[in-house]
Image (tube, rainbow over all chains, first blue to last red; front, side):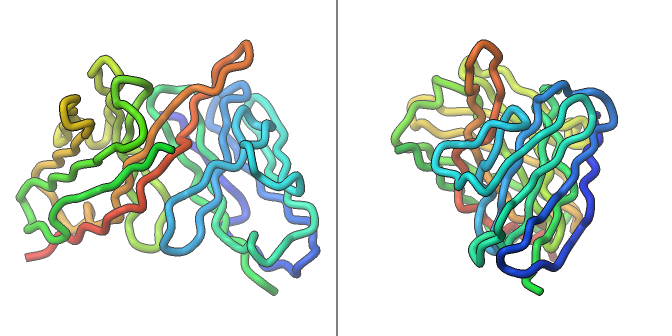
Length: 107
Length: 123
């Protein structure tokens, strides 16, 4: 299995801050990397696929980058509705794996 | 608009079989892939397995020996059976559609999810 490691596991930030979450794969996944946002009691919601392509309807303050084994999710100008947990997920292998998640909390 | 809804017992006894069904509306399970994902309390997401539009399956290796995913095309449903459950199988179980977004290269995403159903394994 391809292991996905996210960091940090949690962070605190102010509204308006720039936030960066990293995701590292245990082997190259090229750019077959997706990001999801999950709010408490809800199902995850697709934000970004192909490492950098925004899903339709996702605000442009979200962006993704990276290739190979190292990836980044950036939120520029954090909004109150962005406080949630974020997961990366690789789709390079048919056996899907997720990162452990990054919880973004209000400071 | 495709919608998914999980159903099944919320409480399962240890050593018994956990059975869940995902009902799909607004789209056909004869297209794309259909997946199960779970989330233990306070923990991250774990992919359980998928069934394709042709009925072929792909399972998480750590669950493969206990797992069966099947489908009923006449009812537009797919199902999960997990045998010999223990407390470690207590989780919220989600069903989701896995489909490709293609632009030269195809990227597979989990783009539509059910609301999830919480299953507790306890005597």
